[in-house]
Length: 195
Image (cartoon, rainbow, N blue to C red):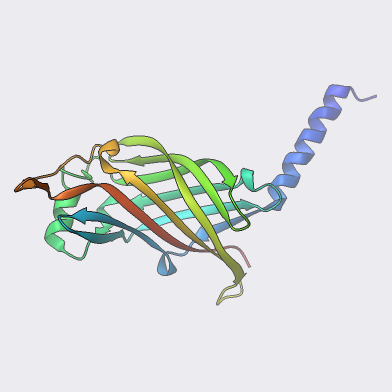
């Protein structure tokens, strides 16, 4: 006769296997996704983006709180449309990409806030500093892609204080700081699963 402990372990493994089968993994499509940001420069906002990134969303539709998001961004791929400014951003004053080549995000908690919205909280590592940050995520839809695979869409926003990540460089002109402290992040993701 099997012991109660053995039966408990078997039940736990079965539940785990069921949860794995219920989860769907979607991989970012960089050609149809954007990792963008805005920051104040004197009296207007300057936009930028990172061109080289990858990531995945593991969705557990039955238990959304078990879903997982992971993102990796190549810091040197920063692009603000101005090569001289981009070189400065890659240097020691800002991202120091030689020492800290990657920006990563790994989720720790998912909380539903509506039918198609959630707060995804996780560890963001940037410029060698790791901080817990919340992301406001909106599910934009799911359907078939051009090659017959399942495709999902996600909108992500958050605001960061760049000083929290050691990005402290600034200068002052007639009492006005050249750069703002708040970075507005806007990410649009199209992610595909297996056929």
